[in-house]
Image (cartoon, rainbow, N blue to C red):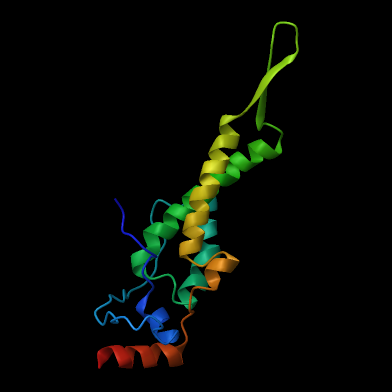
Length: 157
């Protein structure tokens, strides 16, 4: 069974909001540092997607060296989604099953359409983690030097 209640918020987000719940602040929250590089398994379109997203996410402080594998998986899933999207856009999204007399018996989604929908769900979850949707961005505080320095100073006290 998973943890109950809302997911925990990052410490800097709590500080930026003035710690509305007045709960104890985690002064030992890890702050990964180091260079951010794409995972070695990325290539082609997935690597292009990485190169499109990573700079902005690093700039806002959302992507750190500890998060590269999750973004790498996102890029691979995105490439797969694009492959299935082409199939669906070409009209290969529904199989029409007919009886012996040629009448439509039933219709069913093709494997490409099913996979596209599953990938869309997985992509959305990762997009929400990285603030890549409008509603998710409302819950993320971007990295600003003044706030970041003040938060670090407060946490070190």
